[in-house]
Length: 110
Length: 115
Image (cartoon, rainbow over all chains, first blue to last red; front, side):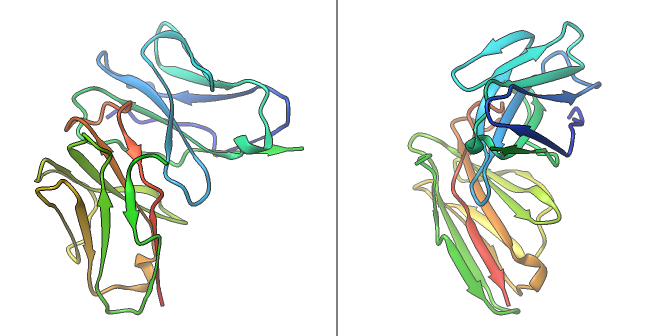
């Protein structure tokens, strides 16, 4: 499994765009990049998944450069309710289990 | 509501005791995954079952065991409990026996406190 590295914590203010970058230098050809969000005392929740270029849904955008060695989760106009831990995971459809790293703790201030 | 049901939500017990945590997967999901999350260790994968069979094992202690029943619900048994076992225990489910990432749905967890 490709190891991921992401910042331990980030601070932002309401209304700003937040970009969280994840490094995955050893990503394999069959690997996808998935981001989960976890609020305190709740289970992680799927946010977005991508393979290359850009993916957008109603919650976030995921940018993946051509070499796929990193990815950036973009949260537009964050609110206080976006305060959570964000996990970047790399896995393929043959991966038997998801391994979560330490994640990025995002704190949004008013 | 994610569709994955975990009971009980909270559990307080003494050292040396045994407890059972229960997980009902989302309707149609055949795989159940158990994770432990403590303050200093993050989310640790424990074990996976698919349609009643053990499929993958993580850092699960010998004092812990799990099983998946014919109705697909799963139980995680923790015995000879120690203070360090205090944590949030999450169950996740998916349709297939592979992680993929997309089809993982987590429950709201059981908070275990060992005193």
